[in-house]
Length: 212
Image (cartoon, rainbow, N blue to C red; front, side, top):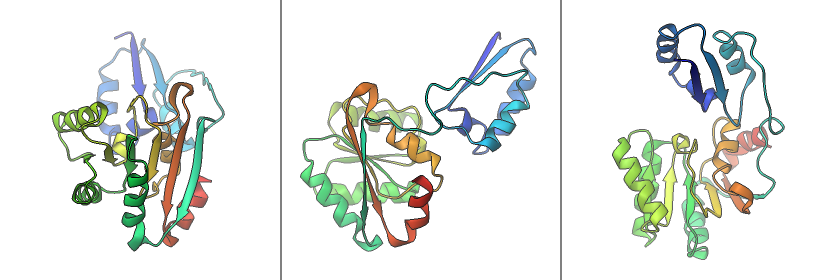
């Protein structure tokens, strides 16, 4: 192995992947070149990365943790109990658009997708408990237009490339502010314009401030 690339490096050095990554690194030649890529990079993760890189150079193509200028951001204050009704209203108004909705938990995403289906909105869920084939099928249904709404956890925020995705909705705000950058990066890609709507309940005020 001459070159090792870690894509979404901040996540690969986090979330419990580190022991597996270290086992792989120990089996690779010391002469390799190591490259890390990510839209966001926290100082703690950077420190961790330096443990297995020699004389690294940092290359930034944009200011740290920035989002595309083509994306419009809106926050809707709403009581937690009325979030679902507001979401259904927004989805119903935008009935021609493919829309990605982010939730906090696997169970919550499943439940939300089922509730949207009951309201007559064709929806699929994608999260860490789904097998790779289930994820690919859900993604395929969404991309082909069979399903108009994709409900996802942050696992789906990374690396998803969906052409013509005009709107991302945060049903729940992310617990880690940097994850907002990854979620929103699914829209407004390659110069297209996009919109990001966050439904913010009173207890999420701190999370909104962290993102801001």
